[in-house]
Image 1: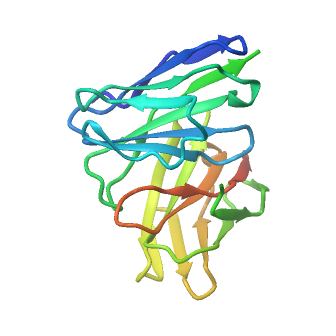
Image 2: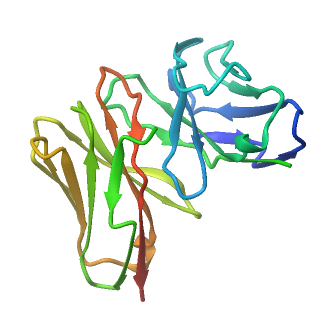
Length: 115
Length: 111
């Protein structure tokens, strides 16, 4: 079946602009996660959804970052007033449930470049 | 912030040799997982070991966990060129999957 998909695969924007990154999880997966990965580093947790609600948003770096999952499926990560330091690969993952033993399946990521 | 640190940062071996990489973490954990990341298949879950387990096998992979030393090792036996990738350990310490990834080991397997 289809895996996790993310669009766009690449996004180049100018400092100060607003961007939206989309994640389509595996059908039926109730848990969805966003991570950010900088060059040479491991993924860094941003936010986790269980259904439609954000169960843990402690990894969002500041209030310029916001994520939604209005119908419990597709999620959008929104970044306002982008800064050059926001440049990274943004990864989305989904899992069947939110148990710590449920495997997370990752999408290919969106590479964001802020000029 | 990164919870774990992998060692070595980079490893280069010949095809057929074994590869061992280590992960150290800072706080008590619930589970530890290993992931592989390459440009072709992205980030893929390999194996999970629970905090009350000491060793686990999956195919050519062997993972050990020493909670007293807060460390884990991943052994890949009879390596193949297709094993070339970055390997990350990831820990969780709650009831759900807010995992914290390490910094990764970049493995190169030379054919």
